[in-house]
Length: 245
Image (cartoon, rainbow, N blue to C red; front, side, top):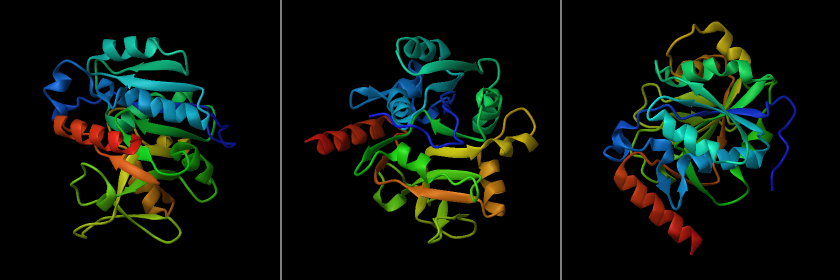
C-alpha cells in the first residue's frame, strides 16, 4: 500500500543509475548494473518500487553506462513517471548527478537512492519509515544505515558511528565503525547551492552536514545486501530464497 510523503518532501525522487559497475564485470560489459536481476527483480525496479511505496510520484534517473537499455526498461513501467537525466557525454559522480537533477525538486527536501541498493525487510517498510523520520528542523541529511556486522557482502570498515540521538559521525582515524550507508537518503536541497557544477561525490555533502551536527542516520530494520560482484548476486539470491521459504 502506497503512503503519502510527509510535508516538505518532494514527490520527485532521484535515482542514481549512471555508474559503470566495474566490479560486476563481466556481467556489466553487456548489462548496466541497475538492470542486473536479483531474485527475479532488477535492482533498479526494486529501489523504484520502494520509493513508490513511500509516496513518490516521479523519479529522475541519471544514465551513462549502456543508457539505452535503462531508458527502454524504464519506458515499460506504468508508474511512476520517469525523467531521464542524460550523462552520456560526461559522468558527474553522485553529487554532480544529483545537482543536475535539482531543478525537478519542488520542495525543500527530497529522497535519493542508489539504483543498486537491495535489502530484505524484517519489519515495517523501510523507505516510508525513513521519510517519516525526516526532521527539517534538525537535519540536513538523513541516511539509511545498516549494521555492518549483520549485512551481506560488505567487507569494509564501516562509514559512521551513531549517537543515541541518531546523529552520525565519520569513522575518521578509527579502525572500524558499526554503520554503513545503505544507499537511500534524504537531502535538504539547499546543500547543493554552494557547490560548483561538475563532478563531485555526495560524500562532500555528508561532511558538510556532519560538521554542522546535522547528519543523521535511520537504522535499517532488515538485511542489507551489498551486491557488488557476480558472486554477491548468488549470495543475495540465496538470502532472498531463505527469506521467502
